[in-house]
Image (tube, rainbow, N blue to C red; front, side, top):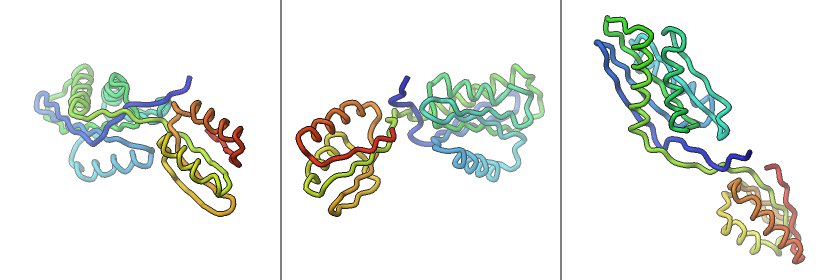
Length: 205
């Protein structure tokens, strides 16, 4: 089943949870790739170098098939999984949440840790602005120069994001199209071709 949109964060957000002297600082980021995830985690580890743990979870992709939870030395499934659970509970993706723990001298036990990491992540995400993003796909249109005005009407009507364009005798336009509008877009292109416009569509979507 095609996924036409997804929910993610508009901006970075922060939260905090305190329990028996321990402080749990939570940081939520909108992310697009594993490289960006590594950079964000690295920056936090550098800034909070004196913290005992930097636990995190992330989710990528509109289909939510890429994800990871990391406990960073805490008992198995006591930190990364509760953080990931908060991402899932809000139906988010393209999101990283890191919880930095400063130990307060009193052990919390596995149950206490689960509550603390869950609560810290929950607090950060509660402070976040959640937005819906369209799932886009690439299209490539080949056309004669005489059809330029008609192609530009297509761009405007379907709110295409132009990635590349070359206007010569045989023109090329590469753009991104919202997946939910693909059916109507294809119908419009076929109609234009039927009317005699020299138009060709490469469809990698």
